[in-house]
Image (cartoon, rainbow over all chains, first blue to last red; front, top):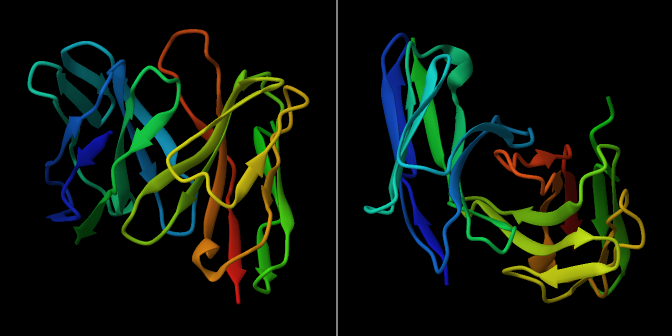
Length: 109
Length: 114
C-alpha cells in the first residue's frame, strides 16, 4: 500500500521561513504535489515535483528527492494568511492521488 | 468560471437513509474523484473515474457507489447511511494530459449521519 508521513503541526512567526517535510512509501511514483487548505475551505494546489530538485513559485518552493522518497515544502516570508493545513500527495501512476494526513501551520505575530 | 460544483453543501441524514451527492465540472476534465476528509486523517479516496463509463475503487469504497455517464457529472451515492459516514466530502477533477496534474476541488459537502 501507500503511506505518506508529515508532521502534524508546525508553528512559526511572521516573516520567518518554515519547512514542512514529507516522506512516502508507495508502490509506484510519478510525482509529489502540495496542497493548501484553510479551515472550512477546499484544498488548493500549490506545487508539483516529478523530478529531483527544487521548484520555486513566489514565496513557496518545493523539493523532491526520489532516491530518498522525500520532499519538502518551503514557505518564506511567512504571513498570517499562510496559517492553514498543508498536504503532500503522491501520484502513484494509478492516476489517483494519495494524500498525507496534513500539517497544520500556525503563524504567530 | 464555475469549476467544480458540489451539491448539497450541508446534509443531515438518519441511519439507513440513502442519498446522492452531486458533482459537476465544466473544464472537460477526464478524471474525477471523490474524497472524504475526517479530522486528523487527511483526504481519503473513495472512488475515481478516468472517463465516461469508467470507474474504479479508491482506498475507502465500501458503502458508496458511483457512476460516470457523462464527462461532466460524477455523483456519489450513499446506499444506507451509517454514522461512520459522517464526514466532509470533496469532489475533485483534473486533466490527464500531462503537466502537474493539478486537482481542482469543489467546496465540499458536509454530511452528518445521526
